[in-house]
Length: 468
Image (cartoon, rainbow, N blue to C red):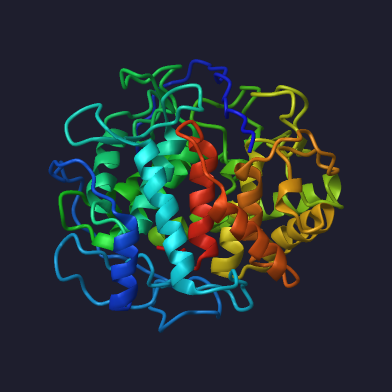
C-alpha cells in the first residue's frame, strides 16, 4: 500500500478579538481483554473538576435494529458499574441502536470485535503518547504538519471512551487527553482547543481553533459522561456543555448555521462563508441537541442536511461525492476553486471529504434519518459499481464526477465507504470486501490519519458504535 502524508497547510489567520467561553458475556469480555493486551504507563487519573456534576437528560436515537433492550439514551441498559472507573457501556456489548436493515460484515461477531481490538492495540502503541505535563496524554500525528493537532486529540477522546472495557486504561488515557486539551485553549475562544502544537507542546500558528477537533472533544465528553458518569475528578457533562456553547459561539456561522473553519473567521473575512465537509458531523449535532435541549442544534442539523443534498444533486449527481470545501455558503454554495485553503484539489473529493461517507454514514445507521441514508446510499452505490466491488480500485481522491486523482491505495479513502455500505441494501458483498481490507491492511507509525479513520470506521462497522 502506498501512502500519502496528510499535510494541512497553515491556515491564513486574521486578527480577531478574544471571546469569553461562554452486559457483555463473560467469555467475550475475556477474549476481548486478552486480545487487547493494552497496558499504559502508570500515573493517576486526577484533575481539577469543572462545575458541578449534572444529571443527564438522555433521549433515544435511532430506529429499530436494536441489540438487547435499549435504554432511553439509545444504548442498552448496562448494569451499574461495580467501581467508579468501570465502564457502563463496555466495548463488545453492542449496546448501540442501529437502524433497521443496517448491514454487518459476514462472519462471527466475536471475531469482528477481536479485529477492532487488535487494530486499537496497534493504534494505541503507535500514536498514544504520555508527556507535555503531569498525567497528560496526547495523540501523535506524525503525518500532519505539527506533531499534535486538535483533530487527533478529538479522535483519541472518542476512541478511548468507546474502547473502555477492552482497554483497562481507557479512562486514564481519556483523562490525560482531557488535561492536555484543557491546557491548550484557543487564543480567541478560550472554551475551544488550539488547533496545533509543536514538539515542545506549545500552541503555534496563532493558537486558534479548528472545528473538527472541538466537535469530537465535546462529543467525547458526552460519551465519557455516559461511560463513567461525571461525579469523579472531572465533570464530563459540565465540560461538554461548556464546549458545546463555545462551539456555537465560535465555530457555527450564525447566518447559515453551517460550521466555520474555526473561530478565526469572522464577518468581513473571506473565509466566513466557507465550510469544510469533514466537519459536517450530523450525529454530533444530534447529540448536542439531546444534551442541551437547545433547538439551535436542530437548525444546524437541517442546514447541513440541506447543503449535502443540494451539493450532491447539483455538482455530483452521478457519484454523490462531496468537495473538501464549499464556498459562497451565504448565497450560492458551490465546491471551492483551487487552493482556497489547502490544496489544488480543495474543490474535489480529497483528504478532507474522504471522511464524509463515515461521518454521514455514522448518522445514517445510528439515527435512521432518511436524509443521511439517501446521501450515503448514493455514494455507496456509485463507488461499488465504479470499482466492480474491488476496494483496491477506490484510489486516493476523485473529482466530483468520479475521475480518479491518484493511483494510490489508501485506507483513509476506502474505510469510510465501509460505513456507507452498511446502509446500502445491495452492499453486503461490498461491505465484506471492505471489512477484509481494513482488517488485513497494516499501517506504519507515520500513518496516523489513515489508521485513526480506519479504527473509527471499524468500530461502527463491527456494531460497536453507540450514541450519548
